[in-house]
Amino acid sequence: MTPAAALADVYKSATQHPVFRIATGETNKFVLLVDPTTDGVDFVQVIEIFDVGGETPPNAHRAAHETFVVLHGQGIAITDAGQIPLQPGSTLLVRPGGTHVVKNTGSTRLYCLTSMIPDEEFAALIRNGVPDRLDAEDLKALGW
View 1 (cartoon, helix red, strand yellow):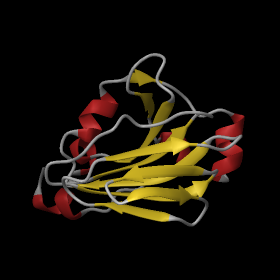
View 2 (cartoon, helix red, strand yellow):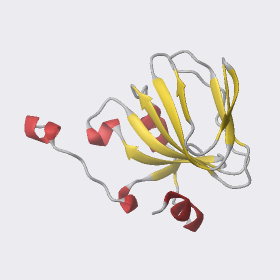
View 3 (cartoon, rainbow, N blue to C red):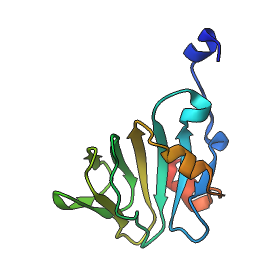
View 4 (cartoon, rainbow, N blue to C red):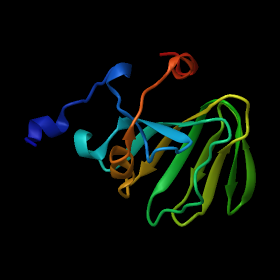
């Protein structure tokens, strides 16, 4: 990457973001907004879409801070600090080493803007998954 290219801003329209599930049958899909590989940054940012009843596996990150900003839907986070209700406008910051689970407890999909800094190969895990797409429910919930 040339120095000028490294400083260039990156713009993508809503239809240009790839969508993946980590594996077939997973309950969550990811809209890859900012990807360290293609965008030349050290973090990843996605819209994480939890199907009804969907959840993350219990996990912790070695060095990364992870944030979840709830855009639409209802859920709970289970962290080292306990159980936390999630609703639109809620923000959860999980520090390195903190074990956490995010669950959709609502009757519709749960949408979170999720960032992990640094990436810790999360983008590669997503990118190596199964391609998916946004449906009419997703586009309406996101206002796209």
